[in-house]
Every structure is written in C-alpha cells, then in structure tokens.
Length: 436
Ligand SMILES: *[C@@H]1O[C@H](CO)[C@@H](O)[C@H](O)[C@H]1NC(C)=O
Ligand SMILES: *[C@@H]1O[C@H](CO)[C@@H](O)[C@H](O)[C@H]1NC(C)=O
Ligand SMILES: *[C@@H]1O[C@H](CO)[C@@H](O)[C@H](O)[C@H]1NC(C)=O
Image (tube, rainbow, N blue to C red; front, side):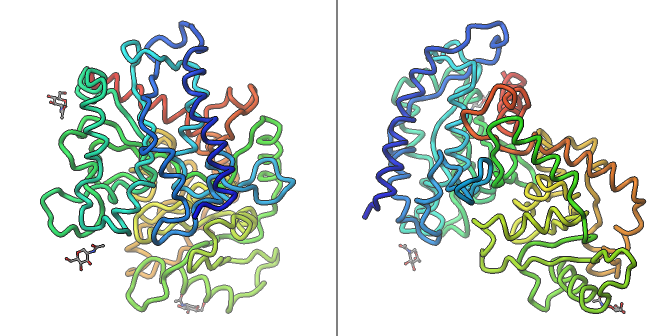
C-alpha cells in the first residue's frame, strides 16, 4: 500500500527521470570534456524507479520511503537546517544518480562517451535476495540487467567488452560476491561473481580484500551543504569546537565475552570514565561512549555529531565488516580517526583518502596490541604532542570536502570544490582509460 508521501516522492522522481535527456542535450561543449564524456544509459523503470515505489515493502529494513525525499538525502534533521539530513547510506544509489545529472560532460551519444553509467539501484534490488523471498535464487541477481544490456542496443555493452560501464552498489562488495557454484547460497548475491560483469566498475561502500571490479567510496554522512558559505561556517564551527574528551566511541557491539576490539574499547571506556572522573586539571574526559546499539543512531545524526565535535579522536573499530560510516561522520566533525586495521579505510578509499598521507590525518593502533597485549588506547593518544594533534585535525578538515556529498543543485562556489561524487567520477574515468 503506497502511502501519500510515497506518491509525492514518486512524482518528484518522475520529473527527475525526464531530466537526464534534457541535460544530456545541453551539455557544455568544451575542451574540458575531452576524454571525460559520460553517457547515462536509459534503463527500464524496473531497474530504478519501480524499486522505489515498493519502498515500504523491503524485508528487514525500516520503511525506506521517508529516506527517499530530497533525492535520496532523506528528510532534513530540523525544519530550519540547510545542510543536515537523515540520510540512509543505501540511498547513495539515488544520490549519485541525481548528482551525475549535473555532470557537465554528459552526452546522449554512447559512441562519444568514455564511460557509460548504469542507473540501476543494485543495492536496493538486492534486498529481496539478501533478506526476502528470492533468498534461494540469489545467483540470479544481475541476469535481468545482463539480458537487457545484451538485447537492447547490444553494441553499447559489447563495444568495449563492458570495460567502460559503471554503476553504484551502495553496500559492501561482500554482499554481491557469493560464488555462483555455492548452493544453497551462504550469504550475498552473485552479481560481482558473474563472468559477464567482470569488466565493469562498481562503486561500493566497501571493497573485498582482493578487489576486482569494485572501488570503495565514502559512506554518505548527514551533511550535504549546498553553498560555500554553509560549508565554511561549518568548518569554522569545527575549528572552534572545544574538544572536552580525548577520545570517543560511537557504536554498538562489544558486549559479548569473547575478546575483540569492540569489547576492549568498551571496557577501557567504561573503566576510565568511572574511575578517573575529572582528575585532570583541564577536565578533559578520557573517553566518551555513545551507545548506538540496536541501530538507534542510524537516522539520528544529532546523537553522535555533537559528541564527535567535542572529542579529539574518534575510535573506528571494525564490526560485522571492516568499514564504518562513522569514519566519515568523524571526519565531518573534525575528529581524528583512530583505526585498528588497514581494511577499515587505508586499503579501501584510495581515491578519496590518499594512502600516502594516512598517518597525517589518522592514528593506527593494531587491534591485536589492544586486545591481547594490553596496550591502552588512551595512553597511545595521550602520548601524541598537542601541536601534532592540532596539525592532524587541520588535515582532517582539509579532507572534509573530499568525503562529503554536497547537495544537488549547489552553488558554483561549492561546485568548484571536488566532493565525493566528483572524485569518484574522476577515478572511474581514470580506471576506465587505463583499461582500454
Ligand atoms: C530457501 O530454502 C530453504 C532450504 O531449502 C528453505 O527452508 C526456505 O524456506 C527457502 N526460503 C524461501 C524464501 O523460499
Ligand atoms: C573482458 O575484457 C577482456 C579484454 O580486456 C575480454 O577478453 C573479455 O572477453 C571481457 N569479458 C567479457 C565478459 O566481455
Ligand atoms: C581499569 O582501570 C584500572 C585502574 O586504572 C586498571 O588497573 C585496570 O587494568 C583497568 N581495566 C581495564 C579493563 O582497562
């Protein structure tokens, strides 16, 4: 049963789907576009729009409908805010689609294009295979898309053996990497395991240990400014913010008795906050702990953004999977990330977070040292000189525009700063040109 808000959302989306053809005609004809033209493949609505119309039918997720508003940014956190939204990371597929419509080098002619974007909401479509009625046929994920690509103007797909095609899959790549031969499936669909898709590029939220087709891009946070003054005033607030805790952990888990990094963090945090209150003359709390168990923080950025603004370091332990959205929430808050394994960010976001500079804006403490060798995280962080901490925070702030997703329709001033979408598109074009 479609609610009224669903219907409104869909009307907005219908406009949005007519727009690509218009904008493809009015693209800049400009030398800046040489080697950068992108063609948006027109797909039947079952690959995108129809998947949104069932937004309140998806198994094991909340009703997705409210989060479709503002072209996938979600509802605003307060009526008066201009930059803050309750964003669901899965909807990066929509956010990216909306944003690529503003890309200045779109072409209606696939023959002119260096890259072909497939506006298929693969992650949303995967929900029925991951959690729903198609769980026993998860090897089929992608067959419908493939048969479309090989039947409808097949020369577009075959021209460069799929090397020039890309799409967004807003989940960990692991969710799409079930080997085709495993029956019954253990976890995930087989989209990325289909040999026919070996040459395409998928932008995922997390890549596998040995990535093949995919490149990880930042999780969308709740911050989506639309003009430079809004970004700049936020950065001023981040710089001014009094950091009254040394470190913060916002997350869940770690309550079981088996040794793991989340448990160690929980123990260290609850221990210091209880046993060493205000011993330091400056009243710096050693650890702040925001309990996000049961998904309570998911669409509620206020719960963790304020504490992140008040903490110097944000602990980013792996959980069910190595990566976390909180890595990016923390960067937006100017909170220096502390990683416990390279899979959390260093080996993931090479396009957005330059690997060679990693130690300039983050701290890495091996999780084994904390869990098994008694290293206290607070001791490591307290040993970093104050000036060094200030320098690292400046580097984090420099990273902020690169990992944020600015709002569609942003002002020129802000468009001149490359955001996560701009950097992803540059990366896709580089990757494709290196292949063919
Ligand atoms: C999937 O297969 C298992 C094992 O054969 C079965 O128990 C389960 O009911 C099936 N699920 C669905 C949704 O068909
Ligand atoms: C992938 O590309 C290679 C050449 O780079 C080609 O030989 C192969 O057939 C392509 N795979 C598919 C499924 O098109
Ligand atoms: C808790 O704090 C006490 C005193 O500072 C310390 O001896 C103990 O090792 C700490 N326990 C944990 C789990 O960090």
